[in-house]
Image 1 (tube, rainbow, N blue to C red):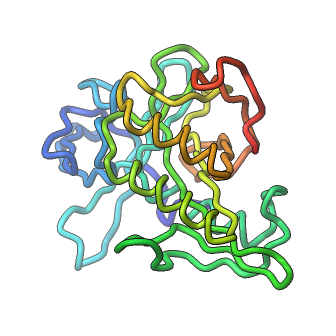
Image 2 (image 1 turned 180 degrees about the vertical axis):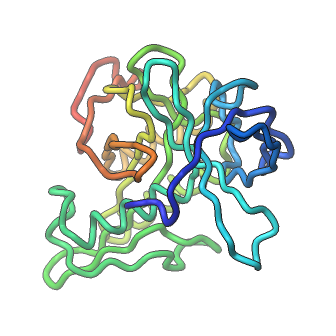
Image 3 (image 1 turned 120 degrees about the vertical axis):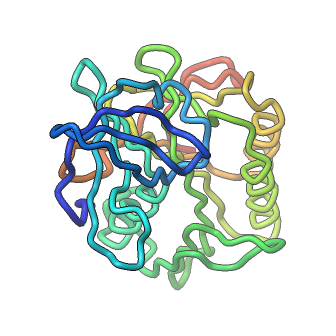
Length: 245
């Protein structure tokens, strides 16, 4: 998935009200950018960080810049726009680029299910059970090389796990797909200390048959693409295991 407009570098001044970020462009101009990330953005919103913004000339948008990336001192990138994983994943699903899901030819985004919820993707194919895929953007890293989710308490995410388990009970296939929007991580685990309820709900969902898939991404100021499955350091199991299953 390529960005619609070429990104421009800037320096973060502050992030506030969750969806706003003041930034300084290279010419010294200070602007306010939209931050499409409702999470805590732990470790990603420190003043002085190098960020990348996507400009727009849409008259319907109040803010003329969108915050897309953080560039770290070691040259790695983190994608902070939580809408990007769904767009990148849709392209990969439709192209059959995810081996674990390549047998499904029909990809339906944002389908209503459960109790007033929408599944990110409903995959369908004759002869196969429907597959409900919930996608989560992973941006937290508190230990070198290790990505974690969530970065704050997520009651909505906990609800989704229960609804996926219900889909399995009805004879469908259900999957949690964690997309790591960092280029500096090769492992993944749940941040059970941040949200114990989510970790417990995940364990229950896995026991009920909900699958788990963790993919990393390739990120640059040009765009974001899926890279491959990564290992899971899962404290709930006490051992490393592949990102699938």
